[in-house]
Image (tube, rainbow over all chains, first blue to last red; front, side, top):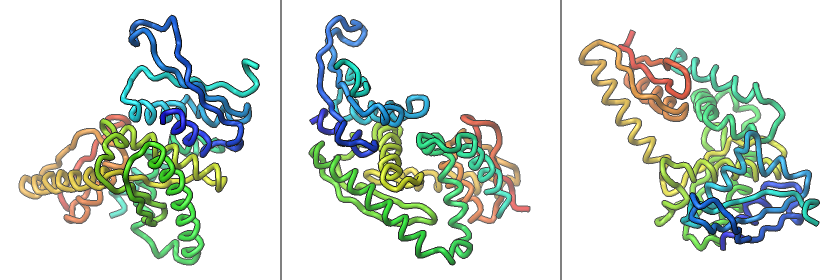
Length: 88
Length: 206
């Protein structure tokens, strides 16, 4: 549900919605402050849209995290934003 | 009358201007917008010539916002109905229903985040920055009621004592609601101090 929600929220605010993918990733070696293992959602967008989803001073990224954390009921949910050209 | 709204309108205008041309600044102007919008609502006659185009544009904003939010509700499996309206010079969209607290959050922080994303969704489709107002579960409506009650109490105190009363720091939206409520009582008010500790001061009628 979270993955799908995030995908929808991001697709609605970018110019290239078809390039948006979200996938969950369980991270190891996480800061124990956050409870050791935490879930990370990795959002990939078109390079042209990266600025849009992050926003000025990270405002949009923060807004997305706020909504997703509220829906997940977890405060250790991480959201990473990368552009589609990376890690390929 | 103008004395109460003018200082707010001025400060509100400086925010978007300072960050012109950036879509993300719609967010930066969030706090400032309610006051300019409300100030505009006081003189609806001025906007009349282009009124129907303006209303159509705002209704279209509401439709885009409602589509965005409705799908969110579906995916998150939340029940809620969407109400769309045009208030003054902006679109107003409300998600109405019970069990929506999760979308409001502590002090409305999730609501503010969703409003910001919804404005961006509108911008993405229209290319125009939106000042759309989102309410969820009546949160803003309740906030407004509480603020009006607070403003009236302060106003009564001013009327009884003849002395000015300074209220706690408030957001621009909150201050605007208070200024309006105080003006209705025939009193004057102004904002004092700098964000984020800017306060409304209520004065006796002059």
